Image 1 (cartoon, each protein chain N blue to C red):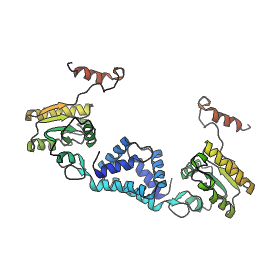
Image 2 (image 1 turned 60 degrees about the vertical axis):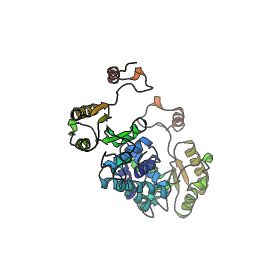
Image 3 (image 1 turned 90 degrees about the vertical axis):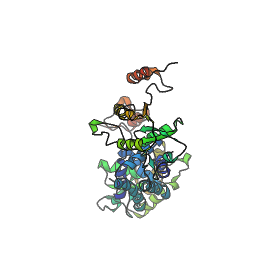
Image 4 (image 1 turned 45 degrees about the vertical axis):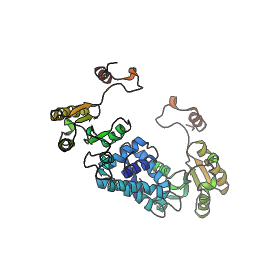
Length: 197
Length: 197
């Protein structure tokens, strides 16, 4: 539709998640209209990302170094590991300011349908950490989905016999939510997980 | 929130039109997870865009050369110029396969509130084209907005005395549309512009 370099950029942008061909075109023309240095900074940021960002050798969080800032922080409780599906989940949990342990990023959740078993996730690496570090507690923070549930159950079954205390984030009503709008599954979990007052 | 290069990319992406901080984060992690060459291709596309794409010296369409492919096409009718606001509009009109003349990109529309007068648009350049080329007809394809209307009226007033036939795209009901859903302004224009059967 457009000449070479412009069409190529639109095609590349269309491949990004959540960007359709209309948005891609809009972004490409935006990049053409702004200051040269501003547009180039985005291009270089993408190249820098791939040059400089990798995974923490211990917990597989994203990091610009060998180990991530959380693993390197000696003040954090090294006996507790919060197990998450993706690096993004770490930021969400950190924002609560309620957790002072370390993390382990699985890289997804168990899904037999998609052919994702324990060895496709970083569960072998988690087992090695249990062997070499002084870990005695897991907090499983996988998503409250079927796959997240299966992953949590698998981890509990595998690691509790090794003497590790395993707990999982509570499922229930969102704070500030309305009972009327809760689906039956969430409400069911909230009932089962109700707390004594 | 994230380490250097990752956070910088998220910040840059958030500046793009239609991309919020959530989408920016999602795209950044997507770029981290895909093949290295695929991610780098997007980065290089942005740099290539700025290196290679400029404006046609004649009509101000986007082009990788001095003149755009439409201006260089000798088979096109050089006596008719379709005046549009943005280069994107050319593609839309080309898709109809109904137009075989050349174009002129104004770079926006008249808007006294935003301080955009005739000299901020490429109207002086259009006047020069009228003087040096064999142009005898304008088809004004500015948007059917208040600014687009003002621009069309201005162009008609300025160029009709120079012997140029000036017409404007019809406003009316969209084909396949429903009378019920037409707003009063559109319906009003459809009435005024009705055609004999």
